[in-house]
Length: 377
Image 1: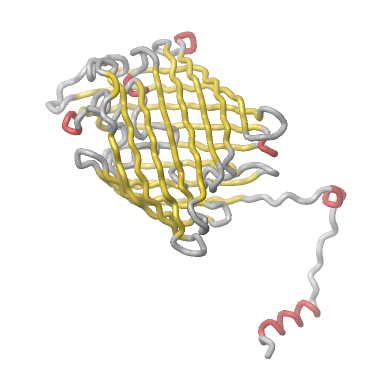
Image 2: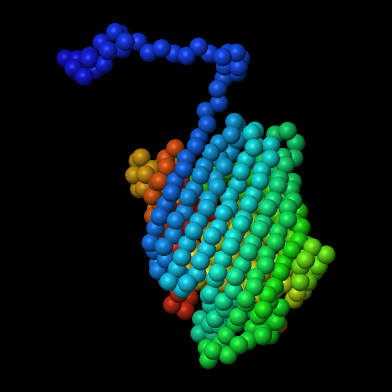
């Protein structure tokens, strides 16, 4: 027996047929490109290690130009129980056919937080209070090497300036050096320089990479006094990621290796490589931001991502990571491990945008909840 609702609908379409607009000259010669646009505002109240309770509003805007990867721009406004105020904007912007890529990382912070000295042997009991303001402007441009492929050559300008830097020990006494390191511990500091980079990005969507995709990033930053930097020094960054199929249900096994290496002892203390101070502030789940800091830092992570529902609205992860930071006086310290598990909640199936909620454990009793918009890496 026919469904009555379907019969009424068919009759209405016969009596009142839709009028389709006539195609323009451009439409008749070229197929219209399907564009993906998604605006996801995400207000949240949460608790994290470095901030305690916080209120945040993150807005993610994703769109796709013709035959290009997904562009994902994110703006965040956060205020925390520790009186931290954070305004941040970042993300990749791809042009048509993936011919070029713009990368941005802008931040304006008032950021009191704790630091623990240099090297991964630093103890959680050696906390030092720091208060400062930060303005960051990191802007890069990449152009495709050749007419096709995922290899890009680029460069940019990176600027970080901090002011009203105050460091105090547990007794409230002002400090002018930490772990024997003096630049940028008090007063103000500025790093300003040019960056040259090589990028190979085979991910169609950085918020949710798929099995078989990969990522490689090499960058050399030269900070020079002629551009306003306090001192001349170089920073080398290496970032490589690989995503493998793990079963027949769309599950993924992801690997990440990351390293930051500075030369000499001229970089301001707060510009030294540190836990959670990568571009998207996601390294070191299981530890407070800035827990390990050094003139160099090496980091690795593996994560198993699996679907909990057939619709892929809900997923889960388990992960392990480890890191080691270098004290210029004693060399690299211990390898600090961490592990955790979490949920992935789909916010926009059209743009594959997920809310990541993780709980992780590190050494010396460190543990906490960690949030991210999209997969962590």
